[in-house]
Length: 45
Image 1 (cartoon, rainbow, N blue to C red):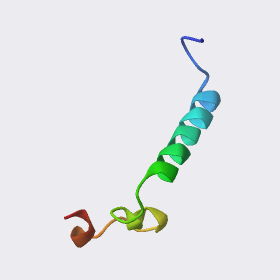
Image 2 (image 1 turned 135 degrees about the horizontal axis):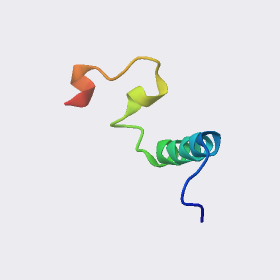
Image 3 (image 1 turned 90 degrees about the horizontal axis):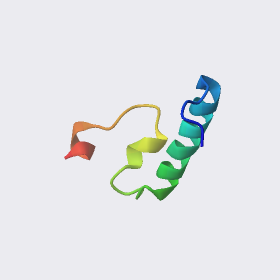
């Protein structure tokens, strides 16, 4: 395993990790994830 990754490779792998986390996230408490705007105060409470 490489100790240091090149930036494009790191960006690609982090993007993959983010997509996996989005798939695993429960959509009910985080409905705002699919929107272009962030969560409302009500959604965060």
